[in-house]
Length: 391
Image 1: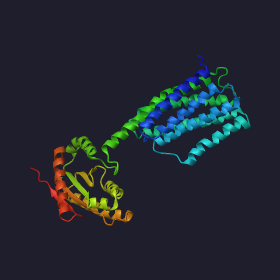
Image 2: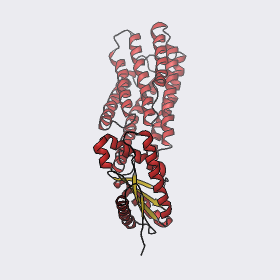
Image 3: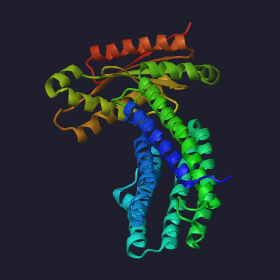
Image 4: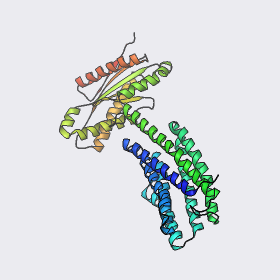
């Protein structure tokens, strides 16, 4: 079956432009989806490349070739840059320049200054093989760490591998001068390379949408269960974690301990130094708590300047020791980064039970809160221990 190159260019233009519009809409929904903006721009620029083959047939061929190759190079480069951003590894400006500038200069040189089509096709072809292989590798390495995106990435990589095989043949034929120009006589290598490119875009756009939408949903879920200022769990997040781990904890753990902490005189700090300073102090509390607990412990911003730590299989003496360690470390480390406020201290209340259940947590948290109130009443900057007697 023969497929006319210009028909494929029209199909590629429509597919690329549609993808650019859809991904732009997703990007506007959330600016925090890493990579989606670059993918949208990449598809937009690629659509210009394919459109140039349809609309610039009447101008000097060298100008049309430069336009097509420039858009093709920048579009595919942005596609890879988007993948780097998506996996949280944004490239430096120097890396981007090294990726684009050499091949762009060589493509212009071998079009306008030294018109050598076979060398030009070889240079661009090898570069495209590198970029597409790198794109597949970046996503594949990321998918091994993020199982939520594994299926979409696996399909994407499979399509890219098919592209690479035909792109290699396209480059080989072009290097030996056996490849006609776009729009001239039919070549099965050229024709089917563009067919696979079309499949890559048609299949790739929903996959990129799936990756972007999946990332967006997970960010929404994370935001719903975490405090933005401290990056700790919020109360809804703590409830979800307890619901998830409590069945296993009831079988494996023999005690449950709650530590409630509160920043002393926090209202006075806010009134005196402003809410920005207050937020910095709360963020520092979150950082200190995160650095002080075990991976199995649950740390929550309970509300305002109050924080909650849930410990499994920890006795009251260890919890008291941990609370004192946190209080001392917080006061000392904050004094080193913020000297204008003076000494800022924490008070802590601790309660423990040998019953591991959701109801036991709620009762123990109330007892720890009462112990925290007692610490405030006894002068602040201290820890108070309340031990629950099990029936």
